[in-house]
Each structure stands twice: as C-alpha cells, then as structure tokens.
Length: 239
Image (cartoon, rainbow, N blue to C red; front, side, top):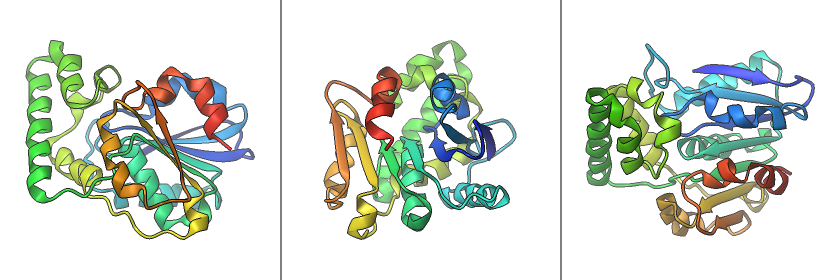
C-alpha cells in the first residue's frame, strides 16, 4: 500500500478509499475542495501499482493502522469508501468503531457469495483483464462491460493488476461479513447506492442496520453520485 496525504495535519482527518482497479488519483478532482478543511489520508491498495500484489483487506487495514499509529492519529472524523473501498471501510469500521466518528459506504458490494458464484465472477473478470492486456485499445469498453460503466476511471490501473491479485480481490468483494452492531455504531454508518447500481442488490442483507442512514439516488449508477454531484455529496453526507 502507498499512502498520500493532503491538508494540514492538525485538521480533522478523513480516510478516502478508492474503488477496485483505480488508485488514489480517483480522488484528484475533489482534493482542493476538501483539503482546505480536512487532513486527507488516501491510500492506493497493494496490487494497484507496479510490482505489488493484493493479499487481503486485513493486510491493507494493518498498513492503515500502522500509518495512523506512526502519525499519532487516534481518531478519524470519517472514512469514505467506494465499491471495494466501501467494503474495506465497512470492515475496518466494524473492527475499529471507537476510532471512527462516521463511515460512508458508497456502492459497496456487501455480499457473501458461495464459491460457485465467486468462481463465476473470477472467470468473468479474468477474461476481462486478459482481453485488455491483449487489446489495449478496447480497455474502456471491456471494463465497462464488467464494472458498471467504470472503465474510464479504471483504464490506467486495471492493465497492471495481476491474476493473483484478482483472486484475492474477489474475496474482498464477495466474501463480506455483516456482523451485529450496536445501535450507536449503526448510527455512524451511511450507505449510498445508485438506483441503477447492481451493488444495490446487497441492500436486503444490510437493512438489518435499522439505525443507519440509507441513501438511494434515482437514475444513477456505480459511484456516480460522488463523481457527478460532488458539492452536494460533500455538503449532504460529511457531518
């Protein structure tokens, strides 16, 4: 994992977690809007840059914890995670509820699929990665087919993701626990999904968090609310 920061360290801290096959650069367009008020901590996961492999959420979270400890940070105002980053944000929060004031889980596929379904997605995504390595000119088109129209933001990272990383990434996408949470912890969570986002199909599984906030945006897809209505997103969701 590589971590970059922006803003003054004395400000309240926000951890931003990007979608799969992207990097910290996913947030470049919003840094100026947030870094004048908050200290931004933005990782790029292992396996999402050259000469690295993604192992697990736990491995990534360990690196985050080491960074926070090294920098004497014991409290985060918010974690905001998108897609895979939403899964990591949710998992990290469930294990560190006292460290986090708020978590925004956006477009996260909080599923726990049987092996046969995970194998289906692995084969589909593996074919996509092989296709874009063999036909770079079709990268955006191929990614859009598999990843809800995310090809434009994934096109520079996806070609360097290894098949070994892909196997482990699938576990972080589709093997997610939804543990029991006390009411006070539930109130810290905001779940965000577009009405056209296939990840919304996990909603019946997480509706048990009755004290959490659920935001469903009409006619938008995967991670679109943040990218297309950024100022409204910031004003509405970051408390």
